[in-house]
Amino acid sequence: METSNEHFECAIIGGGLAGICLAIQLADGGVSVVVFEKGKYPFHKVCGEYISMESWPFLESLGLPLADLALPKINSLGISSDRGFLLNHNLGMGGFGISRYSLDHYLCEIALRKGVRVMQECRVTDVQGSAADGFQIRTSAGDFSSEVVCGSYGKYAPQFVRFSESERLNADNQNYIGVKYHIKTDFPANRIELHNFSDGYCGISKVDHDWYCLCYLTTARNLLENGKDVKQMEEAVLFKNPFLKKYFQNSKFVNARPLVISNVQFSKKQTDLSGIFLLGDAAGSITPLCGNGMSMAMRASKLLAGQLLHLFNGKQTHGQAAQNYRREWNAVFGRRIRAGYHLQKLFGKSRTTDFALKALNKSPWLTSKLVALTHGDVF
Ligand SMILES: Cc1cc2nc3c(=O)[nH]c(=O)nc-3n(C[C@H](O)[C@H](O)[C@H](O)COP(=O)(O)OP(=O)(O)OC[C@H]3O[C@@H](n4cnc5c(N)ncnc54)[C@H](O)[C@@H]3O)c2cc1C
Image (tube, protein in one colour):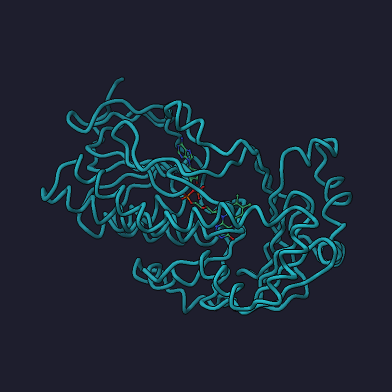
């Protein structure tokens, strides 16, 4: 692989929340950083855009003036079954809404101001090398070299990433699709609702721009059974839930077509691979119903930044950094991921969901406990 003159101490593959937050923290610590992002900011992403309040102080510490953005604060939760039962509950710590279109863009601008080199519309196609000899990164904009490489490429591992056989077996065989719209509608700004339907659920909550995010996750099978036609599937399946039917029929859609992603799988992966540190969805993801992937991505960036700064300051080796990061990651996220796995089974099946919601309605303390499991502590 031919190497250009461009050398950085740290190269980050993927400028989503995990990658761009890591870049900002490393730049604050005096590390030279390049981020490769195949998209061009600002751009939309399939995401429910509800961020657990646990991340508020962290985002402010990076330089994002959240308090000035007049974002909706969300403290009320509604969960419905497709049979029309609605569970209402207080969200406890709660969260806030902001579109990924705005959030990732704001963070990119902060990174640029702090001296991070952000290569947009630049896809990484290969990584060679080792921690001992340094890494060469091949991209659509040429080759680069770095001492450390971090993978924050999200839920889809690029082809050059080779997972072990056991890792592939670990993946949840269920294949999901995610669909997202921005809509304008009549809905309380302090509320998030999750509406179940056969083999899926759909969230609605307010974000910036006077938009509401309407985003759902369902099995690829559901779409196939409806002739691969999103509209047809919505009318045949989602509309069986009376709340969803109302929101779909009585809202103004900002864009005519939704953003759709396929091949979504949820599993714990690993925190390092072939000497590359992994974070965000690249290290493991859980279904949005069961946890807050964005907060997990940001928190992982904080854990990793701490270990990498020790590495760059000569206080530990690459191997020690990898080991310490793995230990911290498991300690912080292990319980949440296990809880999410069990919680997921309660939803998406008409009778089970209806029964579970009615039982939870009679046990507010249990509902509070489950809600708390999906949110983490402030970090
Ligand atoms: C339907 C759905 C709803 C969700 N709702 C919520 C929610 O409401 N709240 C919440 O907290 N979480 C939610 N999540 C989870 C959340 O979106 C993710 O956990 C979060 O985006 C992970 O951030 P990340 O930085 O790891 O990945 P991403 O944000 O996906 O960023 C990865 C980036 O890497 C780039 N990239 C990939 N490959 C390459 C390459 N080879 N070269 C260069 N760039 C590359 C991509 O373009 C992308 O920008 C939801 C997820 C889904 C699927």
